[in-house]
Image (cartoon, protein in one colour):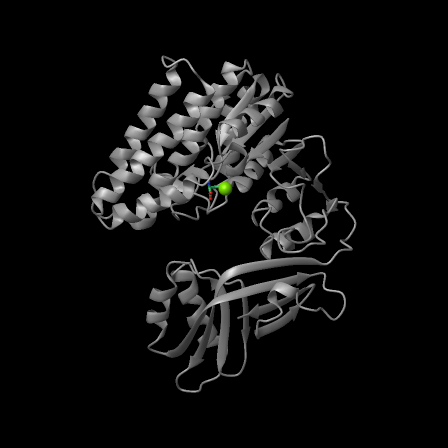
Length: 421
Ligand code: ASP
Ligand code: MG
């Protein structure tokens, strides 16, 4: 049994869906579960919808809903000509449901809960289209709602998987279906015990694929991407970037942790614990060898460069000149955890603590306000975080960053990290 994952770029338009069809045709009749993300940049569009709904911007809301309708109907009609085909009423049903979700606000519903209730429609719409297209080219498959299987707690937007329940339901109910035909399902979405939709965090579909693979005892997982595999740097920024042929689980976890965007950070752990190989392959050249992540891959010999833009460096100073020791650290970390602001790199000295975070973390400002009774906080936006993993020699900054100033420099284990502005 295999698990495949196709991300947004692999289903961004009708031709892309046809390409997915070409790949899956070759696996017709095999035991295969396919996890699919929302089409193209639809998740961002749905995020906009949540924002305007939250702000009561009714006109903008209508415009976005119309855009979502047009986008999905255009792709569907490009793939399935027969206007009487049930795909059209299925899409209509889903879009109507979505419209109702953003119709009015209910008391006591948090922003994050609404977010998950809205954002899941990207994956639901996309999998419906792909599944029906596959039927139309006679690739037998079954569409299933991932929320019935991926059970999480109620930590909206970052649901934590309830492994025991999830594994039990997948083995008992889903597995017999995967034994019979290709199963098409959504990445990224789950459900809590109150029947609310939850999500696993942006870009969480890789993680979904790993969860299904773990619970189904799959033989391997393939993530189909628009790149040749896992590269040691972004080829758009580094002319000498090369593909990595094989990576062991531990180094893959570290690379994902530092932000190598090809693999979602939580993906490797479940695979590692059952020794399931992970392939990262190109959906553009399906016969090329991509990257394999497996237990016995040799340690990497290449240096890896990971660049994260749109970073904010927060420098936090104690007002009373007390040291940054256990009590202050604990208050600071509590604030980061409470406002769900993730730290990409941190450092502390006697009376200051620095943390570099993604600027788009929407609660940074609220967190700064909450901390500012006790601390003086300097915020520096527009920074870049460069991580050099497996750093070998004296590194020279890549040319496109060489004019920048180094604000923070840290070497820990195999990684050297620089915050630049
Ligand atoms: N559609 C979701 C996102 O864009 C999940 C994923 O693609 O992995 O974040
Ligand atoms: Mg995506």
